[in-house]
Structures are given as C-alpha cells and as structure tokens.
Image (cartoon, rainbow, N blue to C red; front, side, top):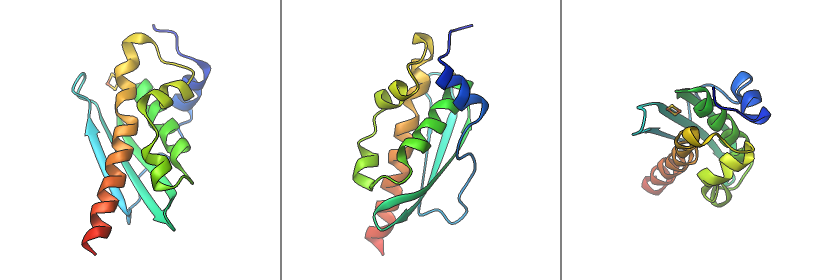
Length: 126
Ligand code: FES
C-alpha cells in the first residue's frame, strides 16, 4: 500500500463538504481518463466569492481527499482566486501524494474550474 500523508488520511476519513447543492449557481464534473473515476463540484456564489462549495466523488481514497482539500481551499475565495488553484497546489496542500496516485489529484482543481465556468456562462446569459 502506498504511503499516504496524515493529511490525505484525514481528508479521506473525514472528508469536508461532501454532498450536492440543489440550487447551485454552478456545477462542473470531470472524469479521470486514467481510471474512469468521476468528480463533481457544486458552488454557490455571493458577491463574487464562493460562499459554499460541495462535491461528490466516485473514486479512490486519494480522489476523495483531493476533492475535500479543493473544497476547503476554495471556500470563501473570490472567483479569480479560486481559478488560480492548481492541481499541484492541491497535492501540495495534502503534503504530497504517492507517485502512482498523482493522477488522482488531476481532477480536483479541474472540476472546480468547470463549476466556475458554468457559473460564468449562466450569468453571462442572464
Ligand atoms: Fe481514479 Fe484515483 S484511482 S482518481
């Protein structure tokens, strides 16, 4: 078994912000081409800030820990700040991931960014 950092184990055992936001302002989902796992992010936006972030992840433990970390990093941030969160930031926030699990960290920020794009396309139409 690969060695996971304590932070990864903590976020995997006690993931923050799991769930859906039924009246979300934006939603984004991505599938991992490497393993087929899926991740979806839901966001609420107030005054240009992410007032709420929730996720559902159908994937491995590392992917769940990554989603949880992304949700914590993004909450309360402005849209611009949240767009600046990279997959590498997330892996770093978790004190690293085992090499063979790095692909699992590639979804988190991407799914969040997609949710923000979804929000922006909705507000542009309005
Ligand atoms: Fe699929 Fe980790 S094995 S996201």
